[in-house]
Image (cartoon, rainbow, N blue to C red; front, side):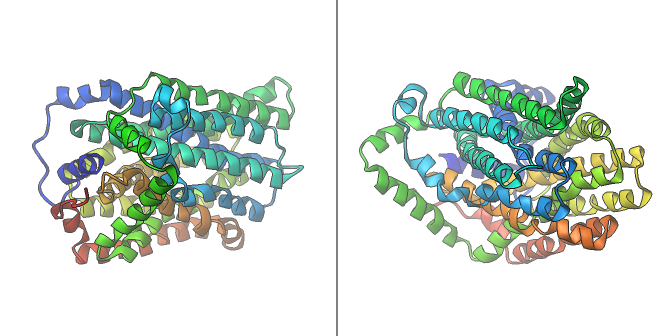
Length: 463
Protein backbone atom coordinates (compact mmCIF):
# COMPACT_ATOMS: atom_id res chain seq x y z
CA UNK A 1 0.00 0.00 0.00
CA UNK A 2 1.01 3.65 -0.31
CA UNK A 3 2.09 4.16 3.27
CA UNK A 4 4.01 0.90 3.35
CA UNK A 5 5.96 2.02 0.30
CA UNK A 6 6.83 5.30 1.92
CA UNK A 7 7.69 3.48 5.12
CA UNK A 8 9.89 0.97 3.29
CA UNK A 9 11.86 3.81 1.74
CA UNK A 10 12.15 5.54 5.10
CA UNK A 11 13.23 2.37 6.86
CA UNK A 12 15.93 1.54 4.33
CA UNK A 13 17.35 4.98 3.74
CA UNK A 14 16.52 7.02 6.82
CA UNK A 15 16.25 4.52 9.65
CA UNK A 16 18.17 4.39 12.89
CA UNK A 17 19.63 1.12 11.70
CA UNK A 18 22.59 0.54 9.40
CA UNK A 19 21.93 1.33 5.72
CA UNK A 20 21.08 -1.51 3.38
CA UNK A 21 23.53 -2.95 0.86
CA UNK A 22 24.32 -0.35 -1.75
CA UNK A 23 23.23 -0.97 -5.36
CA UNK A 24 25.67 -0.92 -8.25
CA UNK A 25 26.36 2.32 -10.12
CA UNK A 26 24.46 0.98 -13.15
CA UNK A 27 21.40 0.28 -10.98
CA UNK A 28 21.67 3.64 -9.26
CA UNK A 29 21.80 5.60 -12.52
CA UNK A 30 19.38 3.40 -14.47
CA UNK A 31 16.48 3.98 -12.12
CA UNK A 32 16.49 7.70 -12.99
CA UNK A 33 15.68 6.83 -16.60
CA UNK A 34 12.58 4.79 -15.80
CA UNK A 35 9.36 6.23 -17.18
CA UNK A 36 7.66 6.67 -13.81
CA UNK A 37 10.67 8.47 -12.33
CA UNK A 38 10.94 10.78 -15.34
CA UNK A 39 7.25 11.61 -14.98
CA UNK A 40 7.88 12.59 -11.36
CA UNK A 41 10.82 14.75 -12.48
CA UNK A 42 8.63 16.80 -14.84
CA UNK A 43 5.81 16.99 -12.31
CA UNK A 44 8.38 18.36 -9.88
CA UNK A 45 9.11 21.11 -12.40
CA UNK A 46 5.38 21.83 -12.63
CA UNK A 47 5.12 22.03 -8.84
CA UNK A 48 8.12 24.34 -8.45
CA UNK A 49 7.21 26.77 -11.23
CA UNK A 50 4.40 28.76 -9.52
CA UNK A 51 6.02 29.30 -6.12
CA UNK A 52 8.36 32.14 -7.11
CA UNK A 53 5.68 33.78 -9.28
CA UNK A 54 3.69 34.57 -6.15
CA UNK A 55 6.85 34.86 -4.04
CA UNK A 56 10.40 36.08 -4.70
CA UNK A 57 9.91 37.06 -8.37
CA UNK A 58 6.78 39.00 -7.50
CA UNK A 59 8.61 40.67 -4.60
CA UNK A 60 11.38 41.78 -6.99
CA UNK A 61 8.73 43.27 -9.30
CA UNK A 62 7.18 45.10 -6.36
CA UNK A 63 10.56 46.40 -5.17
CA UNK A 64 11.26 47.82 -8.63
CA UNK A 65 7.77 49.33 -8.72
CA UNK A 66 8.56 51.30 -5.55
CA UNK A 67 6.42 49.39 -3.05
CA UNK A 68 7.74 49.90 0.51
CA UNK A 69 9.59 47.12 2.37
CA UNK A 70 6.87 46.67 4.99
CA UNK A 71 4.24 45.96 2.37
CA UNK A 72 6.60 43.65 0.51
CA UNK A 73 7.23 41.64 3.67
CA UNK A 74 3.50 41.35 4.36
CA UNK A 75 3.05 39.80 0.92
CA UNK A 76 4.39 36.59 2.43
CA UNK A 77 0.77 36.16 3.61
CA UNK A 78 -0.38 35.36 0.07
CA UNK A 79 1.19 31.96 0.67
CA UNK A 80 -1.69 31.15 3.05
CA UNK A 81 -3.12 28.41 0.76
CA UNK A 82 0.07 26.40 1.24
CA UNK A 83 -0.58 26.38 5.00
CA UNK A 84 -4.27 25.42 4.87
CA UNK A 85 -4.33 23.11 1.85
CA UNK A 86 -5.05 20.16 4.11
CA UNK A 87 -8.57 21.57 4.51
CA UNK A 88 -9.50 20.67 0.93
CA UNK A 89 -7.10 17.73 0.49
CA UNK A 90 -9.87 15.27 1.52
CA UNK A 91 -11.94 16.62 -1.38
CA UNK A 92 -9.11 15.84 -3.80
CA UNK A 93 -8.70 12.43 -2.16
CA UNK A 94 -12.38 11.56 -1.93
CA UNK A 95 -14.05 13.04 -5.02
CA UNK A 96 -13.69 12.03 -8.65
CA UNK A 97 -14.18 14.72 -11.29
CA UNK A 98 -17.16 14.13 -13.60
CA UNK A 99 -16.21 13.09 -17.13
CA UNK A 100 -12.54 14.04 -16.70
CA UNK A 101 -11.89 11.26 -14.17
CA UNK A 102 -13.53 8.72 -16.47
CA UNK A 103 -11.30 9.91 -19.30
CA UNK A 104 -7.96 10.24 -17.48
CA UNK A 105 -8.30 8.60 -14.06
CA UNK A 106 -8.82 10.23 -10.68
CA UNK A 107 -5.28 11.55 -10.10
CA UNK A 108 -4.53 12.71 -13.65
CA UNK A 109 -7.92 14.39 -13.92
CA UNK A 110 -7.20 16.54 -10.87
CA UNK A 111 -3.72 17.27 -12.21
CA UNK A 112 -4.98 18.58 -15.54
CA UNK A 113 -7.75 20.65 -13.93
CA UNK A 114 -5.44 22.36 -11.43
CA UNK A 115 -2.84 23.05 -14.12
CA UNK A 116 -5.39 24.72 -16.40
CA UNK A 117 -6.58 26.92 -13.52
CA UNK A 118 -2.97 27.69 -12.62
CA UNK A 119 -2.20 28.84 -16.14
CA UNK A 120 -5.16 31.23 -16.15
CA UNK A 121 -4.22 32.56 -12.69
CA UNK A 122 -0.64 33.36 -13.75
CA UNK A 123 -1.95 35.26 -16.78
CA UNK A 124 -4.25 37.29 -14.51
CA UNK A 125 -1.44 38.09 -12.05
CA UNK A 126 0.84 39.18 -14.88
CA UNK A 127 -1.69 41.76 -16.07
CA UNK A 128 -1.85 43.45 -12.65
CA UNK A 129 0.31 46.48 -11.77
CA UNK A 130 1.93 46.62 -8.28
CA UNK A 131 2.53 50.36 -8.58
CA UNK A 132 -1.16 51.06 -9.25
CA UNK A 133 -3.07 48.49 -7.21
CA UNK A 134 -0.94 46.23 -4.95
CA UNK A 135 -4.09 44.69 -3.45
CA UNK A 136 -5.25 43.45 -6.84
CA UNK A 137 -1.78 41.97 -7.20
CA UNK A 138 -2.29 40.30 -3.83
CA UNK A 139 -5.55 38.78 -5.09
CA UNK A 140 -3.86 37.45 -8.22
CA UNK A 141 -0.99 36.01 -6.17
CA UNK A 142 -3.49 34.38 -3.81
CA UNK A 143 -5.25 32.66 -6.71
CA UNK A 144 -1.92 31.44 -8.09
CA UNK A 145 -0.93 30.11 -4.66
CA UNK A 146 -4.29 28.32 -4.23
CA UNK A 147 -4.05 26.58 -7.61
CA UNK A 148 -0.41 25.72 -6.92
CA UNK A 149 -1.19 24.30 -3.48
CA UNK A 150 -3.94 22.12 -4.95
CA UNK A 151 -1.58 20.88 -7.64
CA UNK A 152 0.92 19.99 -4.89
CA UNK A 153 -1.71 17.84 -3.14
CA UNK A 154 -2.35 15.84 -6.30
CA UNK A 155 1.31 15.51 -7.31
CA UNK A 156 2.31 14.25 -3.87
CA UNK A 157 -0.41 11.60 -3.98
CA UNK A 158 0.49 10.65 -7.55
CA UNK A 159 4.19 10.36 -6.67
CA UNK A 160 3.57 8.17 -3.63
CA UNK A 161 1.11 5.89 -5.43
CA UNK A 162 3.03 5.56 -8.72
CA UNK A 163 6.53 4.60 -7.67
CA UNK A 164 7.66 1.12 -6.71
CA UNK A 165 9.68 0.58 -3.54
CA UNK A 166 12.99 0.52 -5.40
CA UNK A 167 12.09 3.80 -7.16
CA UNK A 168 11.19 5.88 -4.11
CA UNK A 169 14.68 7.26 -3.41
CA UNK A 170 15.29 8.16 -7.07
CA UNK A 171 11.79 9.58 -7.32
CA UNK A 172 12.33 11.84 -4.33
CA UNK A 173 15.68 13.13 -5.62
CA UNK A 174 14.21 13.66 -9.12
CA UNK A 175 11.15 15.44 -7.75
CA UNK A 176 13.26 17.84 -5.68
CA UNK A 177 15.61 18.47 -8.63
CA UNK A 178 12.66 19.17 -10.94
CA UNK A 179 11.04 21.37 -8.30
CA UNK A 180 14.16 23.48 -7.90
CA UNK A 181 14.59 23.79 -11.68
CA UNK A 182 10.98 24.97 -11.90
CA UNK A 183 11.63 27.56 -9.21
CA UNK A 184 14.77 28.75 -10.98
CA UNK A 185 12.88 29.02 -14.25
CA UNK A 186 10.36 31.35 -12.62
CA UNK A 187 13.10 33.27 -10.78
CA UNK A 188 16.21 33.64 -12.92
CA UNK A 189 14.36 32.75 -16.11
CA UNK A 190 11.63 35.31 -15.49
CA UNK A 191 14.16 38.04 -14.61
CA UNK A 192 16.16 37.37 -17.76
CA UNK A 193 12.99 37.54 -19.84
CA UNK A 194 11.88 40.82 -18.29
CA UNK A 195 15.28 42.36 -19.03
CA UNK A 196 15.17 41.09 -22.58
CA UNK A 197 11.67 42.46 -23.15
CA UNK A 198 12.80 45.84 -21.84
CA UNK A 199 15.58 45.80 -24.43
CA UNK A 200 12.80 45.51 -27.01
CA UNK A 201 11.63 48.95 -25.79
CA UNK A 202 8.72 47.62 -23.75
CA UNK A 203 7.79 49.59 -20.66
CA UNK A 204 8.67 48.09 -17.28
CA UNK A 205 5.09 46.97 -16.64
CA UNK A 206 4.68 45.54 -20.15
CA UNK A 207 7.96 43.65 -19.80
CA UNK A 208 6.88 42.10 -16.50
CA UNK A 209 3.51 41.17 -17.99
CA UNK A 210 5.18 39.50 -20.96
CA UNK A 211 7.49 37.62 -18.62
CA UNK A 212 4.53 36.26 -16.64
CA UNK A 213 2.76 35.23 -19.84
CA UNK A 214 5.79 33.14 -20.80
CA UNK A 215 5.76 31.57 -17.33
CA UNK A 216 2.08 30.72 -17.82
CA UNK A 217 2.98 28.99 -21.08
CA UNK A 218 5.49 26.81 -19.21
CA UNK A 219 2.60 25.23 -17.30
CA UNK A 220 2.07 23.26 -20.53
CA UNK A 221 5.03 21.10 -19.42
CA UNK A 222 2.96 19.84 -16.51
CA UNK A 223 -0.16 19.36 -18.61
CA UNK A 224 1.66 17.30 -21.24
CA UNK A 225 3.32 15.23 -18.51
CA UNK A 226 -0.05 14.53 -16.88
CA UNK A 227 -1.53 13.44 -20.22
CA UNK A 228 1.31 11.06 -21.13
CA UNK A 229 1.64 9.62 -17.61
CA UNK A 230 0.00 6.37 -16.57
CA UNK A 231 -2.68 6.48 -13.87
CA UNK A 232 -1.47 4.72 -10.69
CA UNK A 233 -2.74 1.15 -10.41
CA UNK A 234 -4.23 1.92 -6.99
CA UNK A 235 -6.78 4.24 -8.60
CA UNK A 236 -8.88 1.40 -10.03
CA UNK A 237 -10.00 -0.19 -6.73
CA UNK A 238 -10.42 3.25 -5.15
CA UNK A 239 -12.66 4.38 -8.01
CA UNK A 240 -14.72 1.19 -7.61
CA UNK A 241 -15.12 1.95 -3.90
CA UNK A 242 -16.08 5.55 -4.62
CA UNK A 243 -18.83 4.32 -6.96
CA UNK A 244 -20.49 2.56 -4.00
CA UNK A 245 -20.20 5.41 -1.49
CA UNK A 246 -21.83 8.73 -0.87
CA UNK A 247 -19.30 11.45 -1.86
CA UNK A 248 -19.89 13.59 1.24
CA UNK A 249 -19.56 10.60 3.56
CA UNK A 250 -16.23 9.47 2.13
CA UNK A 251 -14.77 12.99 2.19
CA UNK A 252 -15.68 13.35 5.86
CA UNK A 253 -14.31 9.89 6.67
CA UNK A 254 -11.04 10.71 4.91
CA UNK A 255 -10.62 13.97 6.81
CA UNK A 256 -11.46 12.51 10.23
CA UNK A 257 -9.28 9.43 9.75
CA UNK A 258 -6.27 11.43 8.56
CA UNK A 259 -6.28 13.66 11.64
CA UNK A 260 -7.02 10.82 14.04
CA UNK A 261 -4.05 8.79 12.84
CA UNK A 262 -1.58 11.33 14.22
CA UNK A 263 -2.68 10.44 17.75
CA UNK A 264 -0.52 7.32 17.51
CA UNK A 265 2.54 9.49 18.17
CA UNK A 266 3.30 10.23 21.83
CA UNK A 267 5.01 13.55 21.12
CA UNK A 268 2.52 14.75 18.53
CA UNK A 269 2.66 18.39 19.67
CA UNK A 270 6.45 18.52 19.44
CA UNK A 271 6.35 16.72 16.08
CA UNK A 272 3.99 19.25 14.53
CA UNK A 273 5.95 22.18 15.97
CA UNK A 274 9.15 20.71 14.53
CA UNK A 275 7.51 20.43 11.11
CA UNK A 276 6.68 24.15 11.30
CA UNK A 277 10.11 25.29 12.48
CA UNK A 278 12.67 23.07 10.72
CA UNK A 279 12.77 25.18 7.51
CA UNK A 280 12.02 28.51 9.26
CA UNK A 281 15.66 29.63 9.02
CA UNK A 282 15.43 29.23 5.23
CA UNK A 283 12.02 30.82 4.97
CA UNK A 284 12.83 33.97 6.95
CA UNK A 285 15.88 34.74 4.82
CA UNK A 286 14.21 33.74 1.57
CA UNK A 287 11.45 36.33 1.88
CA UNK A 288 13.94 39.21 1.78
CA UNK A 289 16.80 37.88 -0.36
CA UNK A 290 15.56 39.44 -3.62
CA UNK A 291 14.93 42.92 -2.10
CA UNK A 292 18.32 42.66 -0.33
CA UNK A 293 20.20 42.00 -3.57
CA UNK A 294 18.29 44.80 -5.31
CA UNK A 295 19.07 47.29 -2.52
CA UNK A 296 22.79 46.46 -2.71
CA UNK A 297 22.72 47.61 -6.32
CA UNK A 298 23.12 44.35 -8.22
CA UNK A 299 21.50 44.42 -11.62
CA UNK A 300 18.67 42.07 -12.44
CA UNK A 301 20.80 40.30 -15.06
CA UNK A 302 23.73 39.70 -12.69
CA UNK A 303 21.48 38.26 -10.00
CA UNK A 304 19.63 36.07 -12.49
CA UNK A 305 22.87 34.86 -14.12
CA UNK A 306 24.26 33.69 -10.77
CA UNK A 307 21.03 31.89 -9.87
CA UNK A 308 20.69 30.26 -13.27
CA UNK A 309 24.35 29.24 -13.52
CA UNK A 310 26.23 28.17 -10.42
CA UNK A 311 23.08 28.47 -8.32
CA UNK A 312 21.33 25.81 -10.38
CA UNK A 313 24.36 23.54 -10.27
CA UNK A 314 24.59 23.93 -6.49
CA UNK A 315 20.90 23.10 -6.15
CA UNK A 316 21.12 19.93 -8.20
CA UNK A 317 24.30 18.75 -6.50
CA UNK A 318 22.80 19.59 -3.12
CA UNK A 319 19.67 17.59 -3.87
CA UNK A 320 21.59 14.45 -4.69
CA UNK A 321 23.96 15.12 -1.77
CA UNK A 322 20.87 15.17 0.44
CA UNK A 323 19.90 11.79 -0.97
CA UNK A 324 23.37 10.46 -0.14
CA UNK A 325 23.18 11.82 3.42
CA UNK A 326 19.73 10.29 3.85
CA UNK A 327 21.00 6.90 2.72
CA UNK A 328 24.26 6.96 4.68
CA UNK A 329 22.99 8.24 8.04
CA UNK A 330 20.03 7.72 10.35
CA UNK A 331 16.96 9.92 10.11
CA UNK A 332 17.81 11.98 13.18
CA UNK A 333 21.46 12.42 12.16
CA UNK A 334 20.41 13.47 8.65
CA UNK A 335 18.06 16.10 10.06
CA UNK A 336 20.84 17.46 12.28
CA UNK A 337 23.16 17.74 9.28
CA UNK A 338 20.55 19.45 7.10
CA UNK A 339 19.30 21.75 9.86
CA UNK A 340 22.73 23.03 10.86
CA UNK A 341 23.94 23.52 7.29
CA UNK A 342 20.93 25.55 6.17
CA UNK A 343 21.21 27.78 9.26
CA UNK A 344 24.92 28.52 8.89
CA UNK A 345 24.43 29.37 5.19
CA UNK A 346 22.60 32.58 6.16
CA UNK A 347 25.82 34.02 7.59
CA UNK A 348 27.17 34.29 4.06
CA UNK A 349 24.51 36.93 3.34
CA UNK A 350 25.41 38.76 6.57
CA UNK A 351 28.96 39.09 5.27
CA UNK A 352 27.58 40.14 1.87
CA UNK A 353 25.82 43.03 3.58
CA UNK A 354 29.17 44.18 4.99
CA UNK A 355 31.25 43.82 1.82
CA UNK A 356 28.57 45.38 -0.40
CA UNK A 357 28.11 44.77 -4.12
CA UNK A 358 30.81 42.13 -4.49
CA UNK A 359 29.79 39.76 -7.31
CA UNK A 360 32.24 37.04 -6.27
CA UNK A 361 30.89 36.93 -2.74
CA UNK A 362 27.28 37.01 -3.93
CA UNK A 363 28.09 34.01 -6.11
CA UNK A 364 29.56 32.19 -3.11
CA UNK A 365 26.60 33.10 -0.88
CA UNK A 366 24.03 31.87 -3.40
CA UNK A 367 25.95 28.64 -4.03
CA UNK A 368 26.12 27.92 -0.30
CA UNK A 369 22.45 28.77 0.25
CA UNK A 370 21.18 26.69 -2.68
CA UNK A 371 23.39 23.70 -1.84
CA UNK A 372 22.47 23.56 1.84
CA UNK A 373 18.80 24.32 1.26
CA UNK A 374 18.53 21.44 -1.22
CA UNK A 375 20.14 19.05 1.28
CA UNK A 376 17.72 20.14 3.99
CA UNK A 377 14.73 19.89 1.67
CA UNK A 378 15.43 16.31 0.53
CA UNK A 379 15.90 15.10 4.11
CA UNK A 380 12.87 16.99 5.37
CA UNK A 381 10.61 15.62 2.60
CA UNK A 382 11.75 12.13 3.51
CA UNK A 383 10.86 12.77 7.16
CA UNK A 384 7.38 13.99 6.22
CA UNK A 385 6.87 10.89 4.07
CA UNK A 386 7.91 8.69 6.99
CA UNK A 387 5.15 10.22 9.13
CA UNK A 388 2.44 9.28 6.60
CA UNK A 389 1.93 5.62 7.41
CA UNK A 390 -1.73 4.86 6.74
CA UNK A 391 -2.48 3.95 3.11
CA UNK A 392 -6.05 5.21 3.48
CA UNK A 393 -5.03 8.81 4.21
CA UNK A 394 -1.54 9.32 2.78
CA UNK A 395 -2.37 12.27 0.51
CA UNK A 396 -4.39 14.13 3.14
CA UNK A 397 -1.80 13.55 5.86
CA UNK A 398 1.01 14.67 3.60
CA UNK A 399 -0.95 17.80 2.70
CA UNK A 400 -1.44 18.56 6.39
CA UNK A 401 2.27 18.20 7.12
CA UNK A 402 3.44 20.27 4.15
CA UNK A 403 0.84 22.89 5.03
CA UNK A 404 2.28 23.10 8.53
CA UNK A 405 5.77 23.36 7.05
CA UNK A 406 4.58 26.38 5.05
CA UNK A 407 3.56 28.25 8.23
CA UNK A 408 7.14 29.42 8.71
CA UNK A 409 7.36 30.70 5.14
CA UNK A 410 3.96 32.37 5.25
CA UNK A 411 3.07 33.66 8.72
CA UNK A 412 6.24 33.58 10.80
CA UNK A 413 8.19 35.24 7.98
CA UNK A 414 5.68 38.02 7.31
CA UNK A 415 7.42 40.58 9.61
CA UNK A 416 10.76 39.97 7.84
CA UNK A 417 10.65 43.30 6.01
CA UNK A 418 10.07 45.27 9.21
CA UNK A 419 12.90 43.38 10.97
CA UNK A 420 15.33 44.03 8.12
CA UNK A 421 14.38 47.71 8.00
CA UNK A 422 14.97 48.15 11.75
CA UNK A 423 18.11 46.02 12.22
CA UNK A 424 19.97 46.35 8.93
CA UNK A 425 20.79 43.53 6.55
CA UNK A 426 23.85 42.09 8.33
CA UNK A 427 22.03 41.65 11.65
CA UNK A 428 18.88 40.45 9.90
CA UNK A 429 20.58 37.49 8.22
CA UNK A 430 22.40 36.66 11.45
CA UNK A 431 18.99 36.53 13.12
CA UNK A 432 17.84 34.20 10.34
CA UNK A 433 20.60 31.79 11.37
CA UNK A 434 19.56 32.07 15.02
CA UNK A 435 15.98 31.26 13.96
CA UNK A 436 17.09 27.65 13.43
CA UNK A 437 17.64 27.10 17.18
CA UNK A 438 13.99 26.35 18.16
CA UNK A 439 13.72 23.69 15.45
CA UNK A 440 17.01 22.10 16.44
CA UNK A 441 15.96 22.12 20.10
CA UNK A 442 12.77 20.24 19.16
CA UNK A 443 14.86 17.81 17.13
CA UNK A 444 16.93 17.06 20.23
CA UNK A 445 13.74 16.62 22.30
CA UNK A 446 12.23 14.20 19.78
CA UNK A 447 15.45 12.25 19.49
CA UNK A 448 15.73 11.92 23.25
CA UNK A 449 12.12 10.73 23.45
CA UNK A 450 12.72 7.90 20.97
CA UNK A 451 10.56 9.36 18.21
CA UNK A 452 12.80 8.31 15.31
CA UNK A 453 13.23 4.76 16.53
CA UNK A 454 9.43 4.55 16.73
CA UNK A 455 9.09 5.54 13.06
CA UNK A 456 11.09 2.47 12.11
CA UNK A 457 10.10 -0.07 14.75
CA UNK A 458 6.35 0.52 14.94
CA UNK A 459 4.45 -1.17 12.10
CA UNK A 460 1.49 0.54 10.49
CA UNK A 461 -1.58 -1.09 11.93
CA UNK A 462 -4.26 0.69 10.00
CA UNK A 463 -6.12 -1.15 7.33
